[in-house]
Amino acid sequence: MNKYILDKDHNPVACNDTDEWGSWFQDASHRIVAQHTKGKARVSTIFLGLDHNYELFKGSMKNYQPILFETMIFGGEHDEYQERYATWDEAVAGHAKALEMI
Image 1: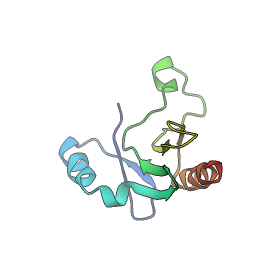
Image 2: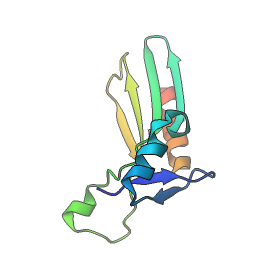
Image 3: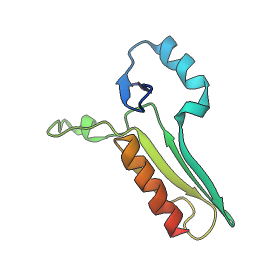
Image 4: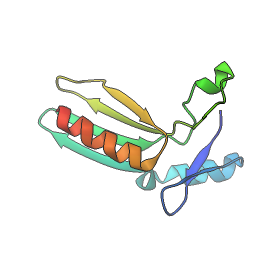
């Protein structure tokens, strides 16, 4: 599974050094895209750091983009809702969509 970190502009950068990746990952503050609580529901959008695009395992590389961000809703009517994205900007938009849902 490919590992990534974020540069200062929130762009994913491949990281083949497991020690460097692990050190970068220990500080969760730069991996949080957004977090909000409304009533009994919490929306969390984060940078995953690992590619979750399973097309890679199917051998389909046409227009391939790593999936590195995730929005989840915890609690409330939409508990366990989940969406994943390739870019920080898509993740920000997805977070806003999830907030509208709750």
